Picture (tube, rainbow, N blue to C red):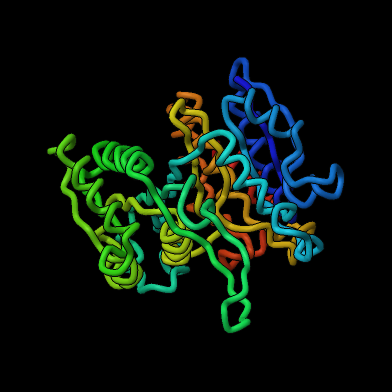
Length: 347
């Protein structure tokens, strides 16, 4: 089993190092690693955010453990050379289309949420986000209007095959949970969303045991604050999913706690915390590694078929929190390494 380690920029190397310590502690037979450069670190060393050497490692790996990309030094680069193109390139080249972002409140952290503790405590949902289409991959550019004004454009589009495969992923996820799927779109104004809704309804006939509902994205954003406990699985497109999953992270208390997996059709996956590279605290030891450690647990479960070990890691994170482990984003003062130590002690 080969794991590609792509720490990336900012706090990426620090948090990936803690996740690797946890994986090493499990002493899994046959688990090996290969390191690769991505993002700003790759651009500075090799002239591209996703070098061919890194892409070759990714293709050969069973799974990728990813830190974060983003470097202010690269903000003035042409778009195709910016650090964020590494993650978009990996999604495209590996066919990583199904992003899973669980959001569940640890009881000890309910008071950290911006919501009332009794509301935050009801959150136990999974966002299934399509990640290989939408405006992020559509035609884009700049042009000049007939009146001489500068105009930017990004084309939102989905074809029915793209919607169908993510709909199946959403229904299957709901079937494995509590049997409720909410499809989020903007079908009242977007033709792309109307196609999305039509195809999701067609796919629903294959899953009579799953209750399907539909919600416009603006209402979904409000309901995540008003009554998040109503949601089991949310399936949505790339742009809407990007926004809603970050909103969900703050509802549970900290963006430093949410893991994610992005899978292709063969089960290969890229696993990363949903937060960014946080260059303002890079190297200071303040980063919370728990989202990355929980991402490693998702990797064990979804790509490596090691559910027992995944359960152990998730239980260790929960126990560390019960024991009082808190990084700065959780109102504490423990360093990145100390948070890793707390998980290892609980493991």
